[in-house]
Image 1 (spheres, helix red, strand yellow):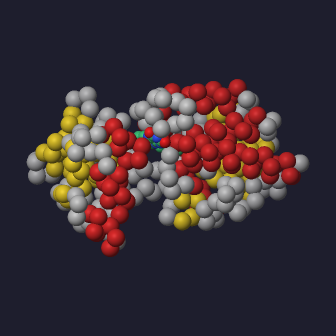
Image 2 (cartoon, protein in one colour):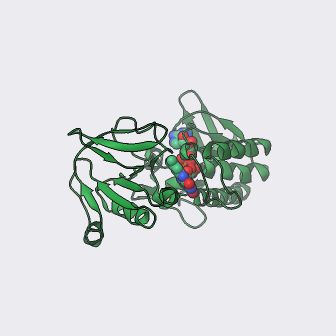
Length: 291
Ligand SMILES: Cc1cc2nc3c(=O)[nH]c(=O)nc-3n(C[C@H](O)[C@H](O)[C@H](O)COP(=O)(O)OP(=O)(O)OC[C@H]3O[C@@H](n4cnc5c(N)ncnc54)[C@H](O)[C@@H]3O)c2cc1C
């Protein structure tokens, strides 16, 4: 029996693991190994570190958690079932039991069906204007999306880029009144995008008609839908695809905590780490309360 099982080995889950393992809780991290951080080419907005690749930072975090005694296993969690002493966490091949569970499953960033999109992630393709707009100073960029979220990303980019297009990818703009006013500041192209191209980094996109648009940055702003089936199965409260928690990262269900991108509107590393620390501290208090 574990004291705590953490589902997700991204920065939120690993931070929670560091706190729990240092407090001598028997801690297991179950992770599918698809952290958003792995895809971050360069991180420059994390306190105390001038520049580092996401992958490198994640490896350091894993080593730290292991050094403090956490176990990490690469397994996908399929369900969490309440038991007499806590929760049974099931993967394809195993069942584990714990007194407390921390959900740190991240948020799924929807990917459109566009050829070569993965090839240029971190090399011109981004999923986060707050994170990456700075790298596109005086460049021509585009936002792919047709909702308020796309306009929000475009507004952020406008502060840095020379020109920002909105590409609705074959859809009509679908905006609330406040965002309709903001959208007029941008050139909107409604044609379907079929391909992105470039050599080392993104140089442009191709539309269905064969026409090309030269851009150096493409920001994907399709409403993020989260991998929250587990949360739904547990009956956790969700708002706009985000698990609702209190300030201690408690979900309201005893012994179940949530942190990071799955529980936060702001999908940022520092926030994931901060919430991971809080979830870890709350789980420690909860488990010690039971003992
Ligand atoms: C391209 C890119 C660039 C970015 N750049 C920046 C930046 O410059 N600055 C910044 O602050 N932020 C940046 N971010 C955001 C940052 O990476 C995230 O906010 C952060 O990684 C969130 O951490 P997390 O632990 O909540 O989720 P994640 O890092 O996504 O980790 C979640 C983990 O849970 C696992 N998981 C999910 N479901 C299950 C399951 N059922 N069973 C087992 N494991 C599961 C996943 O496989 C994954 O490993 C960037 C993100 C991307 C994609």
